[in-house]
Image (cartoon, rainbow, N blue to C red):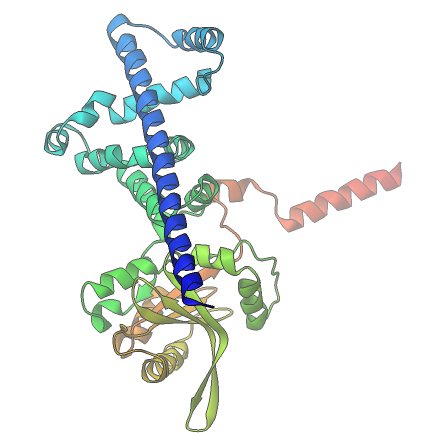
Length: 364
C-alpha cells in the first residue's frame, strides 16, 4: 500500500469518526429537546390540575384535540400524556431544571439523587424513562440504573432485563477478601465489579450436568455472558494453558478487565463451595501474575463461581489467602418470589392430579 493511500485511509477513518460523533450528538439533542417538551406539557397540565382542580378527564380530551388539530404530531396518546404528568409529579416542573443545583439540593427530598436524575434523564430515551418510572420506586436506585444505562449503553430491553434480574441488588455482593488484599480505591472498584448471584438463565442446562457443559454453554452464549458479567470484561481464553515446572494446568475462563486493568481468572464449580477451591485459585492467580501480568497491570483477581456457598465458610477460606479472590453463586433460572412459589403446585400434586384424571377417564 503506497503512502498516499495510507494517508487517505487515515483521513477517511477520521472523517467517519467525526460524522458518527455528530450523529450521536444530534440524536441526543433531539431526544433531550423532546423530553423537555414532554416535561413542559406535563408541567402545564399538572399546574392546572393543582390550581383549578381539573381531574384525569382532561387527558383523553386533550389527546383527542391534539390528534385532530395536529395529526402529524406523534407521542400525545392518553397514555403518554399521563406519563408526562407523572414525570412532573415525580421530578418537579421543568422550570426547576434551570435552577442552580445548590438550590435544588436544599429544597427537595432525596435531593442529591433527585437533582442528579434531573440532569441525566434528558440523556436517556423516553422509553427508558417510562420503564424506570414503572419499575423502580426508590430515587437512588433509579439513579443507579440511569447511570449504568448511560455508561454501558443499555437498550430498553437490556435495561428491562437488568431490572428483572435485580442487577442493583446483586452488584458488589460477592464474598471477597479485597479489602485485605487490594489497596484503595482498587479494592472498592473490584468489589463493585463482582455480583452475587450471577444469573445464567440463557442456558438450557438441566441436572445432572458437568462443569465442562456449563463452560461450553457460557462460551456459546458469550455475548450474554459478558452482559451478565458487566462492563469492562474482555474475553481472553477458555481452558487457558499454563505450564509450571513441566506440568500443565488449565484455567476454566480467563478475562481481562479494562477498567480494573487486571486479569480475572474464573473457575466454574458444580455444587457447594469448598475451602480447597480458594487454594487452587490462589495458585492460578500467582502464575498469571508471574507469566501474563504486565508491570503496569493491577494484581490478578480470582472469581470462584459455585451453585451454592456458605458465606461464613467462604470468608474463613479467603481470610489468609494472599491473592484477591471472590466467591459468588450462579443460578441457571431466576428464583421465583416466595409468594408465587407457594402458590404453584408441586410435582407430586401435578402427578396426583394427572393420575386422578386418568382414573376418571378410565371409568368412563
